[in-house]
Length: 144
Image 1 (cartoon, one colour):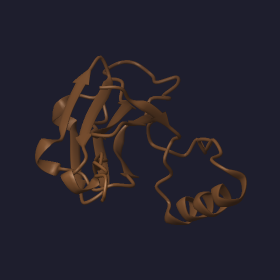
Image 2: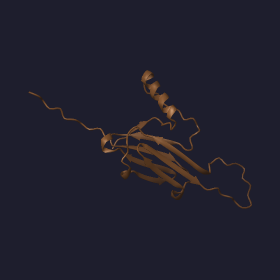
Image 3: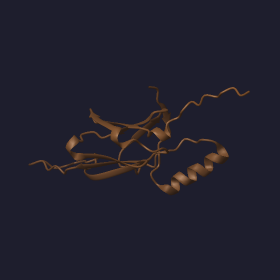
């Protein structure tokens, strides 16, 4: 199974629409991260499925929820606050609390076959496309 890399996907509908309009004039353009996303993701696509990787360092599976509705994947993370005894926090750059990110995909997903794994702080989600969304080769018959 070969995946080709897709540009990062914005979750804002206005961003998606503007990118669609601009790409009709200038061709496909790389999208840049705004830095406001709650965690970084990479998305790839092939004929059968989408593959998503999300960086979630220090997140336990119990604090993670992955859901799919139609053509949208939502990842929610709830990292609890930790209080150390007898120490003063000098810097806290790793986020705590609730974070969520929804990714709109351009095809419908077979939600019954979605798989997710969290290994070494990287969440990998495989999202098989629905039968109707998969590319099919059509045989051309020779006519009389």
